[in-house]
Length: 238
Image (cartoon, rainbow, N blue to C red; front, side, top):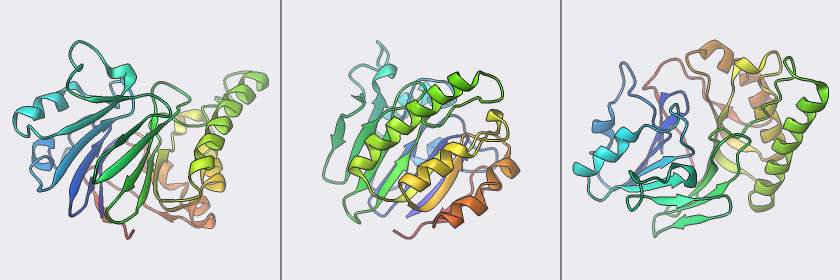
């Protein structure tokens, strides 16, 4: 399978049988355009974890004109007059499933949901965190508030860990705006649920900050994907 970094939290997963675009925000400057991605053979899925504009761009709906068979799977908070009837909407605990993939929605510590995805052809297990993270803000709020934020995150990890003991690929926020402990949530995730590959996201253009998690990720048994530019692709063996 090929994983392509689009921007921020946006990725394209490309297999022999499907293409999946997750949290599309905007086209890569020197990489593939959305229109190019949707013309790959096989099934086409477009997923969005929530309605924040850096995770969901309504332009994806216009692709239906080119590919009438697109399958949209969105968080429930995206449902509106514009989207109703065009997508499958999921809340925490709900599942979308067909003969190619299975998607289960888990919670977030911000808006919307996160996705656990199973490729039925290969058995590969993939996780996209959306805005799920330990948003502790421990340099900006009281210790009590920071602990409450962390507890919410750890409770959500417990929910995921009840169903999954490992993932083949984890896409998860590594956001330096949190301050010196900005990698804490990613580390806690991998400590609880190992991932064969780890792809950082939600780091805007702070590539060096995202890459700082490499040592911890690999110490926890994950092959770290070190992004250097938008549109970059890597092969993930699953």
